[in-house]
Length: 162
Length: 278
Image 1: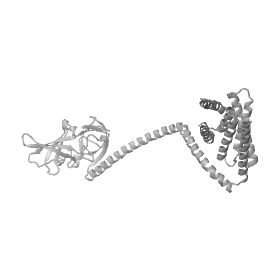
Image 2: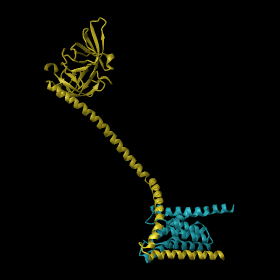
Image 3: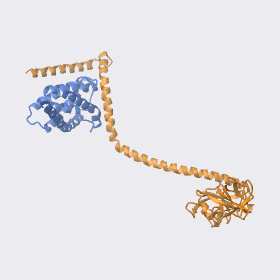
Image 4: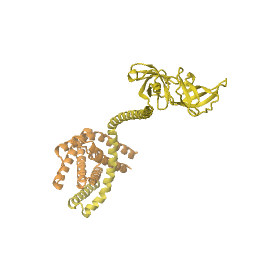
């Protein structure tokens, strides 16, 4: 039940990411809701959960954004894993740290995506300014998402321990 | 330790799968077999997401455009009001046009008979509902004189009882003080059509002094006989509704339904010097 709900939740997130988020564009960039959610999993969940969620969400995004198939899968998985790994060594775990990780994670993702897109497929995306805006937007988006995901995690944990 | 190895294996497998996908995407052209297979798998997924996405965007656009819709609604409401007013004006003009057209036909018909006529618009009435006596916007400067006859396309209305430079007062045949020499069109029986206060509101006048020998029946038409100083002969007064024989049995009295609708009068024709033409 827990996994079905998680899959459904991420499907909704990806749908919003590909439809509603572009409509909320500020300064040419719009937030990456799916990445913010994956980073939430990385900060609150376990390593296996993080890796599988990152790869699965990335793969679905790859299905939607051809022809760079596999790139989002790889980036989401490794960025989520990196955030999880670093987060283990941080003593203070709160929403401000989560926001900082969302900013850094989005910045790295966007940078790597631009690099791979440009080098491998000859595509180019507006890099620096757009990346900063996206990272900042994801940082703000992380505030409600962090509490929401924490609440969901606590809810399922309680249910499982009962 | 076992758990850690499981994680490592998962990462390696997923990395290999992702790199394989990337390699296939990079190497295989879009129209190749592999490209086609990928397209077959991907297209339904994209279709589902696009469908859901369009629904969501449409939903939010609906609320986003509420202000716009309200403004459009206000503009359209104002437009509807303007159009309704225009329609009312048009209907009024159409009705007026129809009235004036028939009045013009009447004017031409009277002029063929040698009468000189002038059209006039009613500007005020003594009664709120019945035009027993009213004022028109034509006067002596238009050649109107006392005792000139007032008609509409339906029939005789009355006579000019007062006249000013730019106005004239008309006393209708339904007025108490009015009497018109009349004859029944079918039998040529003569009588006197007089107004009666009790009958006015029913749109009726009384035709008195009909001979007891008269063979008039309800439905006969009554018109001016030409006797008297005011009305020329042959103008329609109305139709007999009811006939009664007087107590003395010497005369009959008929109730005549006027041809003119005295509750709805707007324009009239005034025959100038009708009797002199005779």
